[in-house]
Length: 369
Image (tube, rainbow, N blue to C red):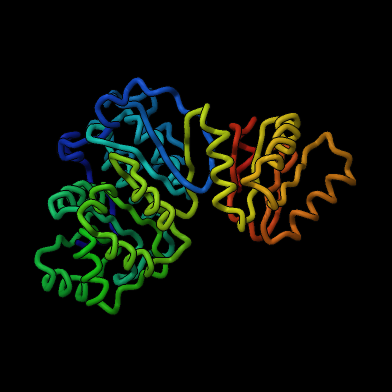
């Protein structure tokens, strides 16, 4: 399926837009403990199970949604966000990747359609007919059709797919800026239509990622992702976070977050470092005391033997700080332990992972992370 990126169309009813399948967390998960953030280069957004709306209006989201999108949402009766929408839309609109643990009931479809439309609206100059800026992959034709009908309420010019020959002919004649379909159909179209340009793709959405893998689409997914630019935004939506889904997230996500339970943060941190000894990592802590603590604890772990661990914080003498920064900058692999304030504005090339172990004292301290 393909579409252009023309003006926004009014929504119909909430049930029409979400196809009766707004999603939330799986049944039985509503009493899970509150998660503490361990932010790194994997993403997970896990909202509360209930499908109740939050106190956040779509008009309150930051970055702000455009007036035509807000008007369409309002006309469709959407004033307040569900938890998954409130968590996901700002991240995708803010150049972040997301992996969302979202089951039936959370409003997942709007959670990725709204930011995708916003992103396509911002593209300047207007895309050429054969320039693909967005791809949505879902496991079944029925789900793809449902997503298509949600998207077309926002975008006026769309071409809905029939059989593959009809799809190819339609795309060859009219072009497509947004493709929606199953892995097999999308891969087939990418192979048959030579004129499609994916070099400036902005967004890739993998909907129901667990089902995509369960149904044996791994090969097609890898083939599709391999043809897309690395500088893009990716949204991975799944009812379960299996090991296979996490591996897919590693392959598909480029700028994500990962959340874990507070009591699992130390073990997750060590696990991340063990698996990425050959990488260059910066870890941000809240206080100088935390930096000193981990600067003592981590080198004593046998699993981290040989890993270069360097501390940097405001209570160190200036000469020691400069030496620490220069040493880390010169390394091809290693770990810098620092506070978020003292490390603000660091410009170090070749950093593979950013870990925000503690929530920053102010998000304004880390706009570039």
